[in-house]
Image (cartoon, rainbow, N blue to C red):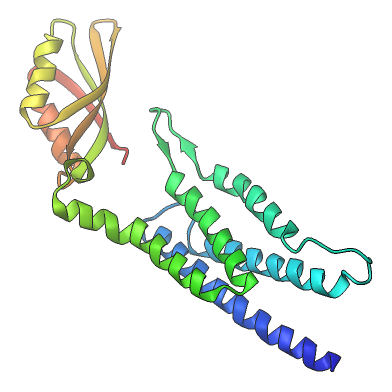
Length: 233
């Protein structure tokens, strides 16, 4: 009788962990294809580990509650998974030197991988499938669809730019010249160094534009001596 119970538990565990590995693989593959710092292996590990700990939590609550002569909380370990996964998520959130924060979506997907692992560990397979569907819908399909509809914000990229010009340059006219090339400006900063003026800003332009196109467009402006551009989106 006991051997049959162990065999049933082992079979169920194998199904759950295989399912969790597949869910983590799907989420991680999306990050991997985008070249993000947290990809396939990490999401798979998080999902499988969360599933394993959830199984341990629920199975141990059923097996050992009588031995301790008091009820055990089967949700105790999963609750610690959710709070503990925040450390891993925080590790992929980066604040760059240009005040741009990146990695928020990746951090959210780390939490999602853990959530899927817990969901599968409890045995809610249909809920896990629906969860994976909506995650992929929100991260991959919906943004592309909204971009196809022509929403301006989703068709833009931001490029950090450093422009070195002569002190005699009319900076207002320079900014107007940049805007005439169908490029928006954000976070403009002007600094004087010796006989040069350094202008740093974020240029907003069409996503189809190459970073090199922006470089040549600014370089061609009058009195511009040096240009440095960096794609930050």
